[in-house]
Amino acid sequence: MSSGTGLFVTFEGGEGAGKSTQIRRLAEALRSRGHEVLLTREPGGSPGAEAVRYVLLSGAAEAFGTRMEAILFAAARNDHVEEVIRPALLDGKIVLCDRFMDSSRVYQGVTGNLEPDFIETLQRIAVNGVVPDCTVILDIPATAGLARVKSRNADGPDRFEKEELETHEKRREAYLDIAAREPERCRVVNAMQDEADIAAEILAIITKLMGGIAAEKTPVAVHE
Ligand code: TYD
View 1 (tube, rainbow, N blue to C red):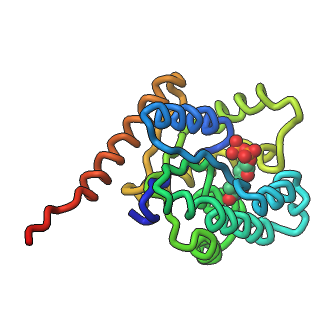
View 2: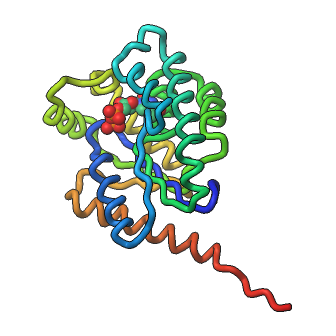
């Protein structure tokens, strides 16, 4: 385990993949089994990071370029990690986070055309050793995801939702590339299934992971 005694699970995916619904369902399922769960999100999750969230999602930072945005996402992430996530993990909680470092790799790195070294260095500083134990990637074709976003957004799209279909499809590929490169950490779930089926698949993934970790942690008897 990379991060204290708790369990750190992140949810990733393109727009309209159903992350928020699924993360809530997982939190409820785990709580009903008696686990202490902290549900959080990025950009945001701590007072400092929520202040930066507004600057990013309103598009106020867009004019200053992708590099500036990437650094702001990283600044928000580091605050969130140090103020909220790390303390919760040290407390033994299960932390579920809606978006984390892979969003920066995909949105700023791949579709923002930033150098991979720059993004990786930023992420190292931002997460400061708090790497997810598991990342659930909800996979959906860009057309289907965007159609869902349109139907729920009365105020119009935010800074990142308004981009071209081609960009969204590139992000989907970028997430699948990350999953292929880091199969130990990442689990790809087909987000075109029924909501309840997706929830069941995710719960099974996390239950299995917890079983594995519990087995690893089973203390070995010491004979004097
Ligand atoms: P949000 O309203 O939280 O939407 P979503 O339901 O899609 O998570 O918006 C977050 C937006 O910020 C989303 O379009 C992805 C983008 N983002 C980045 O570009 N980089 C990042 O590191 C993070 C965390 C989010």
